[in-house]
Image 1 (cartoon, rainbow, N blue to C red):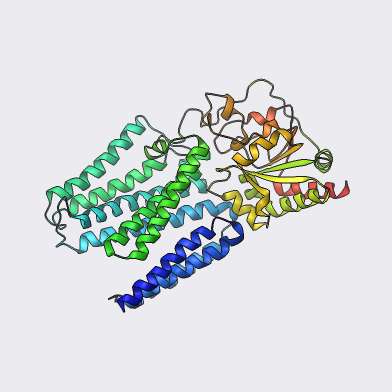
Image 2 (image 1 turned 120 degrees about the horizontal axis):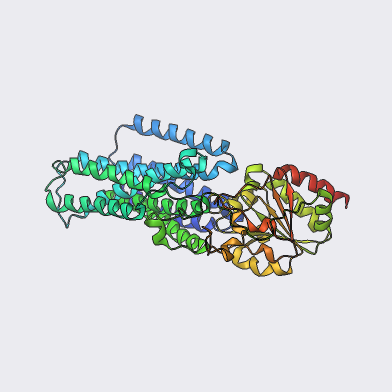
Length: 467
């Protein structure tokens, strides 16, 4: 029976790898997700039926409840709340890994410890990483949900130093447990103390993060959960859990590095909690010079778009809030019927989670070849007649290039200010998620079309049809 289980685990692991590869393209992403889900279901079922497992009522009861909650939540969640759901689900994964370590340490009082005991090290590592992922993800959830007390970066004196000391103390306790105790029973008090400090570090790690930095921390916490799950796989010698954890951990780490490069920040800034809490993150006005705001009428905007040769649409979180992606796609179809070359420019950290805009536009069936990454599209703005910015803010703010005092200074942005004309769809002149004013809005080439993004796009579609 064990041989059959190992073979099934191999195929389940293979489904994870193939599914992850298929997720890299929208045309195959749905099938890849389903393939990986089937593989996971197979792995869970075989583990329950093939190993020496008892308490089937509790196990299947938990599976039914969890599956029901997950399915209902996934179907009902709005696109604007998708980042919160990702943080919540990721936090639950970290919590599971931490609970596994807690159970294995406490329930195995005959666990022999020592510096060379790999089992103890894996238990401690899984508990630490899983706890940080759980508590950090819960704070990220609260920030994304808009809880006022933590939505903005929460900073305090000597924050970076204190966070570093806290993490060093937590790791030091783990090493002390391994080197100074002979069994887990004697070290239980210190173990629980290490668990509490891990939870505290996860909270303090994410509290100072805010603004456009949130997609990066979500990706990093996701990698933490993967590593914690891999620790559990090592602990149980379960190859499918190990491979799944490694895939999540490595994919999350690679994505974190890519997004750090997009934000022009180092990974060490993220790890040591100095991320997003710099000066200027509390609503500072970075714009200087001409402060004139120029509005445009729907008719003029429609004419400008209809008679352009090349239009680039820059989507942002405001598009998700307004649920205007379908209307936006309708507009780009109308413009293409008029012979306009229409493209979408996607910034790596647009929205509030990795790939937020890609998911949003895929939902509206926007063809993937029309979506261009920042590196691909930035050279095209200088030859573009009109750029239509819908709900994007910080990722198009020229202050990132010019204002050394700006909290987003040095962040690569979409060079929309190089285009001949810029139309910005926005509710008002409020600052973006980073809390700073956007210099682009005062550019002589920029025209503001105020109002709800979906309402404005619906009216714009009607005007374009008449031209």
